[in-house]
Image (cartoon, rainbow, N blue to C red; front, side, top):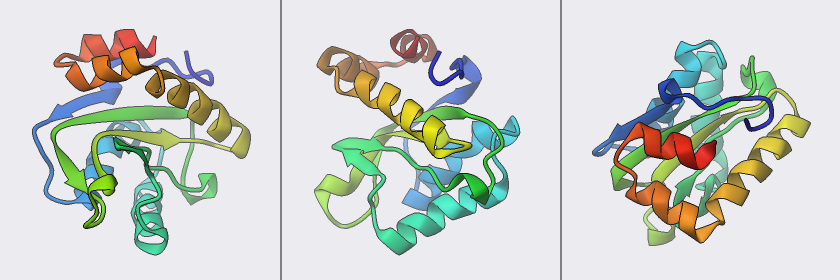
Amino acid sequence: MIAGFKLTEDFIQFEEEVSTWEDAITKSSKPLLDKGFIEQSYVDAMIDSVKEHGPYIVIAPNIALPHARPEAGSNKVGFSILKLDKPVAFSKEDDHKAQLLIALSCVDSTTHLEILQSIVTILSDEEKNNAIFNAKKVEEILYIFS
């Protein structure tokens, strides 16, 4: 359980590839949108934010954390995961490619920091990080984040 949110298989997706970073954000946030955690305005705000501020959501090699301000349309705390076989480019630089997208839905700055801290703790564990990138099944991702 991370910040009161329990990750379930409905929030995890595997795809071979997406055509653009905009598609990656849209696809990664779809489970949150489908379940009412966020509004379409929030997805649009995530994309607009990258257009305005650049690929700041790529927080480490191959890892992006799309998110927007809560007032843009976040209803509930949660996150969804999209794992791509082929990285998607957020700019022309190699450092700005991502294979793992974790779309965040935060209702305030406190939950934003809680979710971010929990996810970064998992991702900074080399063993867990390698396991995520080698995962082929939803259950493997669930286990790592449980």
